[in-house]
Amino acid sequence: MFDGTLGTIVTSKIQLIVIPVYLSFILIESVLIRYFKANGSSDAKESLFNITIGIMSVPVNLLSLFITAGALTWASQYQITVIPLTISTLVICFMLDDLRFYIHHRICHRFRWQWGMHNTHHSSERFGLAVALRQGWTKHFTGTMMLKIPLVLIGFDPIIVVFCGVMNAFYQFFCHTETIKKLPWWYEAVFNTPSHHRVHHGKNPQYLDANYAGTLIIWDKMFGTFAAEDENDLPDYGLVSPMTTFNPLKVVFIEYINIFKDVFGKGLTLKDRILYLFGPPGWSHDGSRLMSTDIKAEYYKEQGIKENN
Image (cartoon, rainbow, N blue to C red; front, side):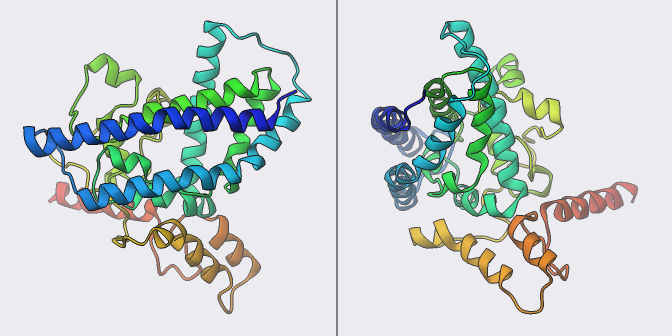
């Protein structure tokens, strides 16, 4: 049976190893941009802010790791088989967990409760390696970590499932940069890359809700959420409604505050309150706000009018 405490220890030790790696590459990227004219922008204040949020997210998320660890411990009692650890099974587990991440990521953009956690990551108006560390502190409360349970039930060791998730996050760190423009076509065709992930962080209408990939971009291509980076219309980073504060508590929790203000507003039906909690970001009972689908529809309508003219 999976030991949740062991899972916490493994996660903690991996993070202690990778954090110095992250910081080293953030420094290298900054030096390349500042002194060697590499592509990208660097802002020491924001980078330090992003790093602070990221480092603080580690102990905070570890405190609530018992939610996911407890669920995996429970699931490990009901495994239909035990899949041995080999190179092949590790690769299969990684690919399945990457699909799990794609689903998790897509949910985080389409349901407001999950977006309450994820919007922290998208709130920066710059794009660089330090932004990868700008993470929410409530991931174990979103419910999407339960998507790991099927992997355990079919026979993968929960420790391996956790390990694959951490390695996926490690890979994604290197996708947060403008310094690398394009990788070879065959790599861009299969894997998530800085170019693909720049699109994901863009608030340009045509880039909204695109490129949810963790490591493999094939999921976006399979499920119709892929968008290529247009060099004539580069991503404009940040939230549709900008958030420029450097208050970490506000950056991390402001959307939750907004959610609860909406949920407990006056004169709403039960359905309205539920949709303010679990509906798409931007949904409103009176239609006064725009969802990403509305923004995209308006954009394509305007494009159509221009083209017809």
